[in-house]
Amino acid sequence: QVQLVESGGGSVQSGGSLRLSCKHSGVTYSRHCMGWFRQHPGKEREGVGIINVDGSTDYADSVKGRFTISLDSANNTLYLQMNDLNSADSAMYYCTAESLYDHTAYFRSCRFGYWGQGTQVTVSS
Image 1 (cartoon, rainbow, N blue to C red):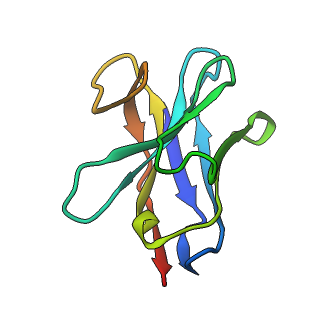
Image 2 (tube, helix red, strand yellow; image 1 turned 135 degrees about the horizontal axis):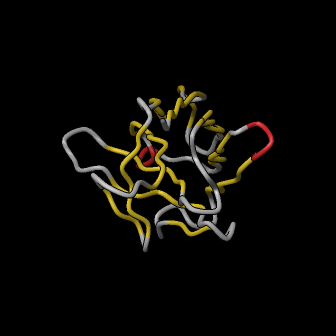
C-alpha cells in the first residue's frame, strides 16, 4: 500500500523560497519513479519534475534551474526545493509515485497512479 503525505506549502512573496516534503511509504525506489505535479485553478495537472529509478532528475522547462527534487531514502521523504518563486508558481502541489496500473498522469517515461492530498503554494507579488 503506497501512501503519500505532502507538507510545507504556504504563502511566500515573489522571489522567495519554499521546500515541500512528501513523507511516503510503500514505494520501492529502484522500481518506481517519484515526482511532483501541480495544478492551477481550472487547469489540468502538470508535471513539475521527477526523480527516476536511477536517481537522475528531470524538470519541466518552466521550473528548470529554480526547483530541485531530492530524496532522503533513510527517512522515506521526497523534497521539492523551490527558489525564485513567482506568481505563476502559485498552485496546488501534489507528490506522486509510479504505479503498475491505473495511471492518471505521465511525465517523460514515468506513469503515475499514486497521489498525495496536495499542499497549496501561494506566491504574492
